[in-house]
Amino acid sequence: MDNTPVKISQSLISLPLVHPFQTSFGVQDKKFAIIIKLIDADENVGWGETVADPFPGYAYETMDTTWTIQEKYLIPAFLKLFENGFPTIEDIDKAFAPIRGHNFAKTGIESAYWSLKAQRENKSVGELYGATKTKIPTGVSIGIQPSLDALLERIGKFLEKGYQRIKIKIKPGWDFDVVQAIRKEYGDIKLMVDANSAYSLKKEHIDIFKRMDRFDLMMIEQPLAYDDMLDHKKLQAEISTPICLDESIHTVSHAIQAIEYECAKIINIKPARVGGYHKAKQIAEKLGKDKVWLGGMLEMGIGRMHNIFIQAKDEFTIPGDTSGSDRYFTQDIIDPPVKVDENGYIEVPKGRNLAVNVREDVILSNTINYQETS
Ligand code: OSB
Ligand code: MG
Image (cartoon, rainbow, N blue to C red; front, side, top):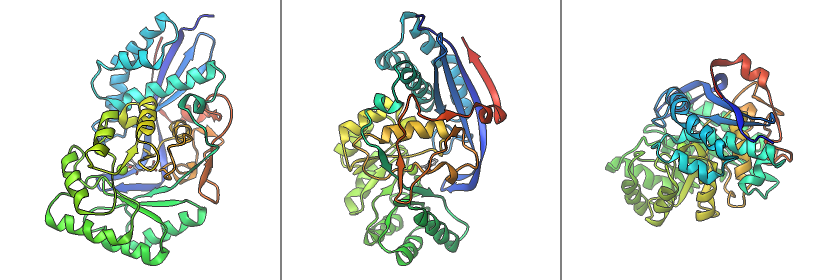
């Protein structure tokens, strides 16, 4: 049996979002993704998704940089490994290490690798990630809305659908009063806020966070600058609400250091931001329950399935940002789409590889750019 993959392709696609997503750094009404398809000589297929956005607002990587880094550096380095047989994750780590940064691009290729490996070994991707659970608890991340009433109504809708936890985006001027109104309307629901770095250590901002301690939030996500762990440590020392870091964490050691040095109490793991699912797995295993949960990048179905399988690991007890496909898209690229049950759980499907069908027709009809390498 010839194990060499004959082909790897990348397809840049876009899907309209059912509801615009607004954060402190911008608004999105479309989602872009690069779908990675890996085919070996026996026609086994692996699927991956690169989740970078058009604008470098959340991360420095974009759909253009990931496309280029993949085509010019990662794909050639990756394909070369197969000259010596089917590579291990350690081989891949070693081949990608000289290419500094660009974790989103690396994760796109790495996720396709896991999917191909699962297909070849007749396993589910979950088995490779160390999944044990049959369902995962989940929440929803709600963007900044045009009015408080619109936000309250939207929260009500997701609570009715069963979502276990509500996360809202905040920014200066859309924070204390908004959280107060939510507590008044919906009582002691599981609630948290995400600032996407919109605040600083100036006194009026510290005061807002001190006053928010009374709301018993699960956590405050990334209040301060994306590259400043020490300021987060200072803020954490002043407030009782746990700080969760998102944008600041790019490696396994960042995650461990942030907890060890008390810059945060919780880490939002996004596989794309930390360089892949293997690294995400390592962070979860090293930090353990109550210190980690899985964030999201409005993934399409392929990235969403990878996210579900990693969250089926024991460590993920805090509800994540992986919502049902219908919260994002009218038509997802997988069948069946992801569904959240009335108790706010997503069932982890059993079956080979991603355990769902990839809708290649939907991918094709939404493709903007295509490239393949053999
Ligand atoms: O900060 O967690 C974030 C989406 C895009 C970029 C950054 C973030 C988010 C989310 C959405 O909060 C999570 C999701 O529903 O996938
Ligand atoms: Mg965040």
